[in-house]
Length: 88
Image (spheres, rainbow, N blue to C red):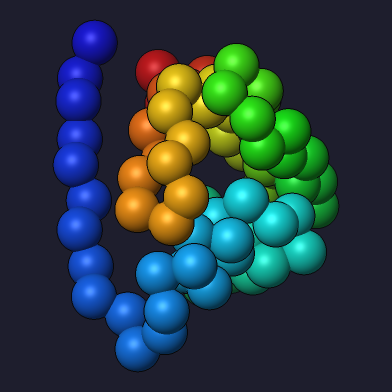
């Protein structure tokens, strides 16, 4: 297993950024997006043990991104697994 930590400062409150990661309507606008892709599915069960599924359609091909939420500490910490079967 590989562990990655991402830190970034946003010009928004911690609560607003945190909530965007867990709101399907907002997350589909930035999570796993590409310049030429389109998110065609975004399901988020935002609870510890809950899962997420995002499907990015790239050049007519669907790329699945999926995982499980391990820790949720609003507004400071989201820990989740990530699996992209096409590239695993």
